[in-house]
Image 1 (cartoon, one colour):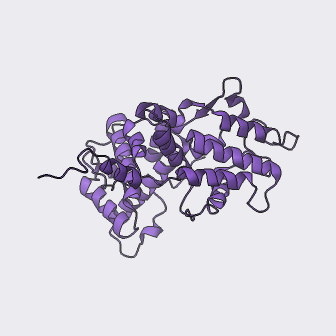
Image 2 (cartoon, rainbow, N blue to C red):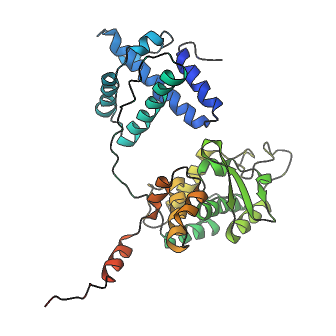
Image 3 (cartoon, rainbow, N blue to C red):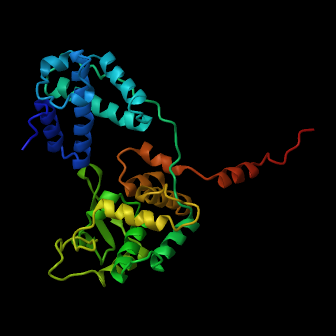
Length: 330
């Protein structure tokens, strides 16, 4: 049942994306971004100082006539509001630009309910090139040791085995959090050491499991509950309540372990373990960039290229090894 205060055109757009097999997370982000945009557009159109933006809760009256009146300047005004009033970061604003461009393209090209696309020339905020944070090889082995040595207080033996398997998969396979929690036992081909996961955009991909991964999974399966109280019998990783473990729970568990690794603090997350896997494979595994793209499930090679960074010691070593390093001109 839909929200009676929502915009029908927006609902149609969300249904269109669902039909394209866009993930639930992506559709929820579109809904959030575009609902707030339409509320802002309605608020500015009212020109009533007695009404605040927070008072705008009903956008069911927004129709094609209203949307045809929106121009590029209106959108840039909204982006300025996000920056100056909401303090949205450049990354957040870039995501919202993407949502707006997709929405207006649909309205113009697919639904054909606006005459022109006002977001066609909309530019995204410039994002500074930030190197992904990752654990060093030493920090990664320390993390694995912390988990296996049961250093986290209050952990039962079967939970330790589960936690160790999760960390091992993150660090060896570079999988996404959503991929890890959705693993079913029958997704694993034990004879071939292969795992099938459903990645971003509902795309299925194959992950090859090394010995560390297979040992960790088998170790957990040997203590995993199988009784009648297990609510999701297919799920590989279970919570203490014997349901499929949630993303939030995995994030909490991993953060607690990461705090115990010297030099990390609380700024690292499960996604940083994905960065770590990619970086270590590239630095130590002599992995081709295209193979790394396939392994990580990236649609664009440009996304994979951020993992090909090198640390400062490698840069210094490269400079020192330049054949002209010790050359003195006479």
